[in-house]
Image (tube, rainbow, N blue to C red; front, side, top):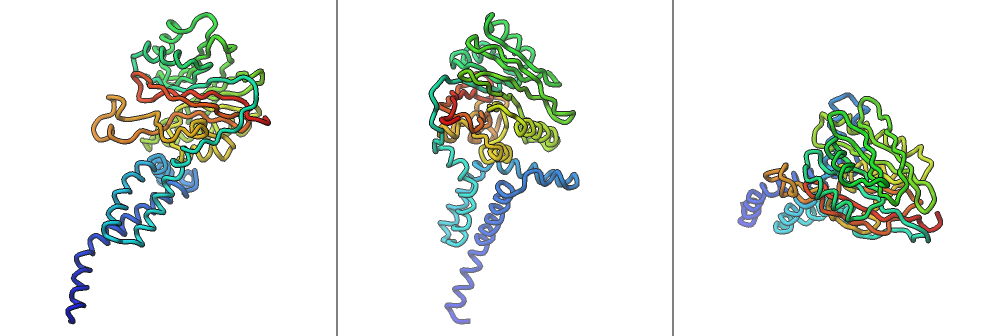
Length: 352
């Protein structure tokens, strides 16, 4: 063979492993993109039981899209160094598909606020095993919310809040979960005590609550929910049944509504897409809060090893219907919990 041809073949043999890795990486990114952004919500549950795994995988991929994007940046750097321009362009487009929902959270989209009063609504997962009762409740009081939706509210937490922090005017009501947890509504003395109702989600789901409040003299509905995390496939049906029940109630709701709680879902996850399809908007995203997290494995000793090094996620959310707008959003510290409290100041949107 001519010398030039032998040189070219030698280069191909040397670069072949890198090419194989590059194409495999592109295939993996494409698969992740399909599962995270294009997989039809609930499709797996219409198929025989092994296919449920696909719905679970789609949920996990969407929730961890930020982490996948960060890991993929190393792959993009490799393609840049190796000058694989076509693969680099295709891979960059797929990473952008992952990252764009997170990038949009930096752009404030709050509507103009109508004149009138406001309501400060918060959500906090206190963590059932947390024993720092005073530190947590003192922080919540200092944030001056009108009402808190409390998740993982055990009997011990309910006792601590009622005994130490509820005077004669403040109200506290709890709905217990099987196994000792629960959801509670803690309203300040300035707010008329709301009537709390536990909503039936059947045998598969976990109960959540609805209450009616007033914002500037007009009624609104407040939902408090805790959706189980998507880590275990065994909890898949129970988790999805709870969220499906919430969507049915919201579709039939006649009042302007606020949904607060630990949804265990990031901004690009199927649950958040389904909320947006009903016309609900995330208060933190409206306020341009960006990627500020409310859950971090590194913030609590229950998580160890490499898991504690993962970037935090915003899993605790406040969703509002179109008639309302978010004026401001703040995130607390959450002493003793692996979650941080979220507080939004809400008002009527102009024209509502």
